[in-house]
Length: 209
Image (tube, rainbow, N blue to C red):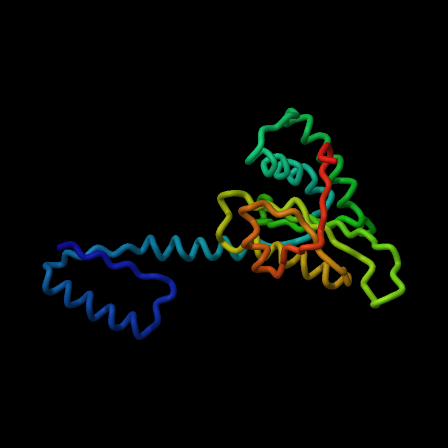
């Protein structure tokens, strides 16, 4: 019988001592037919170190080209493009640069940055409400859009971290409501972050009226 022993980063000291005793017994009883796999440990450490390098920051105008490229990937992941990639990137890069170059803009964008490339983003636009003389209501709403994490980095909690950063900023600005249009696959995440589906919201799409 071949025994395979894998040590992980989270082994407690007591378990390690017990494991060493077990290995010694197997070593004696099974003619040293034991294989240790230290690669698993190295992979785990490397992965956690890499994840620790991924940080969330505000987008800058210099990120515009990378943001445009991610936007293209985002929208063409489930739908076919009707515009050439080069034309879209030129148009979208210009749009991004104008919105994210000044702190006075109603737009903000947060990105996932691993030090080499952008791995995701979420954007927020603030818009004003008409002044209200009753209920002391906040006079700002926030619109969340362009929320995307590259496929290979999903299911690691990065999207939730990214969204929470944007929501903290919205709360700090005193927004009345944060609104968004959710895809079927993203509704679970939004609900975990406190979003609900209101019964008093109407929508009219172009060509349906």
